[in-house]
Amino acid sequence: MESLVELYPALRALWVVWFFVLFLGMVWFVMRPSRRKHFESQADIPLRDDRARPRS
Image (cartoon, rainbow, N blue to C red):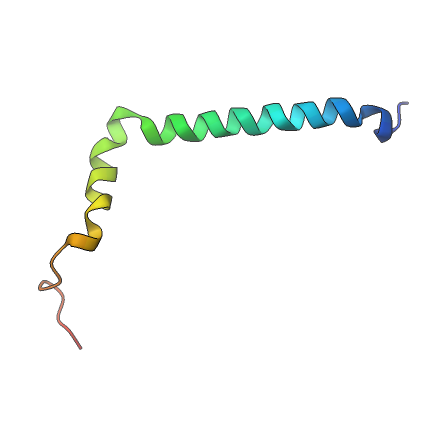
């Protein structure tokens, strides 16, 4: 059985590939056209009027 020291370069390369795939998946999830309306509604939260909520 190989020791972890000998497997380190391969495991390190696989770790980088895994994070790259994960990053691409997150970018795909966020940039889907079906999510555009959701993110546009979230973008104007700081600009919404607070009159609907009573102040304490």
